[in-house]
Image (cartoon, rainbow, N blue to C red; front, side):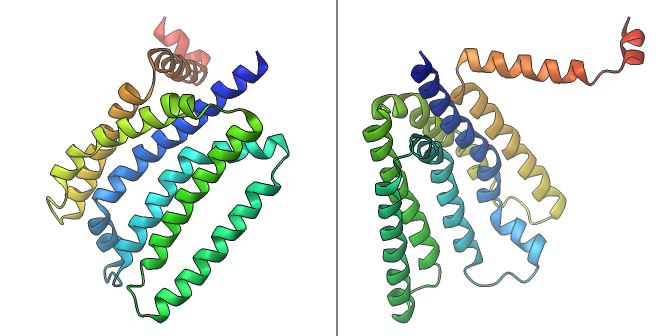
Length: 219
C-alpha cells in the first residue's frame, strides 16, 4: 500500500510540475521576441535561440526530475550518477569542438536540451530497475496527459504570436496565453478527482483568509 501511494505521488509530481511549466513556459515561448525587446531593448544575437532551448530543457526536467528523486531516495545512485557524469563530459567535449569549428553559438543550448533528454532516459531506466517504477504507468499517468495539454495549449498562442509590438498589447496577449494554457492544463492535464482537490484547496485558502469581521459582514 505504501509503495502504491509512493508511485501515485511520483506520477502526480511529474505531471503537476510539467503542467505548471506549461502554464508559465508556453506564454513566454510565444512572446519571447516581444518580451526580450521590452526587457533588453538591444537584444544580443542568438539570445532567443539560447532561451528557447533552455526552456525546452526545463520542460524535460519538470517531467523527469521526480524520477531522479525517487532513485535518490532508494539510495542506489552510483550507476545513475556515473552516467550523468559521462553525459556532462560528452557535452563539454562536444561544445568545445563545435565552437572551435565555428558552429552557431546556440549549439551549446541545443546540447543542454539533448543532454537533459538523455538524463530523463537514465532516470527512467534506474527508476524501473531499482524502484520498480512502471514505464507504462509513468507514460499513462504523467507523460501522456502532460504532452496532450502541451500540444493543445499551442494553437492559440501561435495565432496571437507577434500580433503587436506595443508593450501593453504584448502583456495582454501574454495574459491571454497564460489563461488559455491554464484552462487547458486544468481540464486536459488533471483528472476529475484532481480538479476537485484543487477546487477544494482554493476554497479552503479563501475561507482561511477571511477575517471574523468579514464573516459577520457576509452574515
